Image (tube, rainbow, N blue to C red):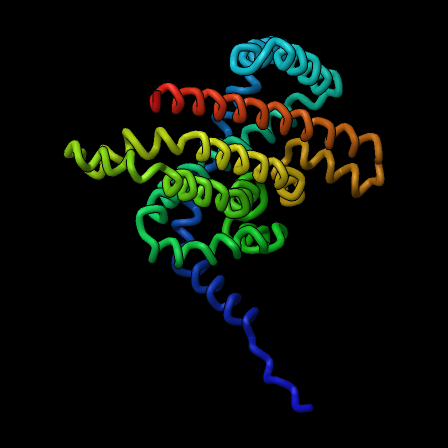
Amino acid sequence: MPELPRTPVGDRVDNIVDWLTDNVNWLFDFISEVLQFFIDALEDLLTWPDPLVLIVIFALFAWWIRSAMFGLFTLLAMALVESMRLWEASMSSLSLVLVASLVAIVIGVPLGITTSRSTVVSTIVRPMLDFMQTMPAFVYLVPAIVFFGIGQVPGVVATVVFSMPPAVRFTELGIRQVDEEVVEAGHAFGSAPSQILTKIQLPLALPTIMAGINQVIMLALSMVVISGMVGAGGVGAVVFRGITRLDVGLGVEGGLAVVILAIFLDRITAAIGDRASQFRDRSAA
């Protein structure tokens, strides 16, 4: 059987990367400086107070937003992180995750609004989101390192690409699920499209959007260890050191810190989503 000719996809990608590196390197430098500024500022804020003070603040917030039981869990779990001497590494990872999630949400939610209002845009964007979600996460690190070097910024960029699709999909889904009769009533009362979006569709879609934001944060946390491999530091680097040294205890401690952060952020965003649902029900009543 004759062989099919080789398609040099990789060569074409290399050419594109080379062109971008030669012609828009200034843009990558600008993005790198902006992201590093926000990461450093948030990390400084989280590591400025004494760990025990911040642990109490986290516990009180968890109690207020969800329940006393979750507040107690937060107090004990965060105290365990500090007792493992992983507090600074955990706050560094939390800074990276929050900045990456914020960027993914800022890009993803408006894009989701656009796809919900245009079938053509939705048809174009959907396969791109499929590509972003199914491509192995390690692949994103290669161009991120080429464009941004080693450190936290390539970790943030790779995390944004990997975690952004749920923000787009859930926003589009939430807006499309808004009852057409409610939207028609808005039109009947003479509301402008911007008023219908901001006062009807977005408030009613808020619980679904919050579910998407929850998924964004969880996917961003799943990238912590991978980001640690490119010099992003944090508990990801701790886990990576445990792997390279075959140090089971170190790896377990780093992994446990990641799990505690994941549970804390998951329950917090879920509680905010529940409050958004209660707000929607009161608005609909």
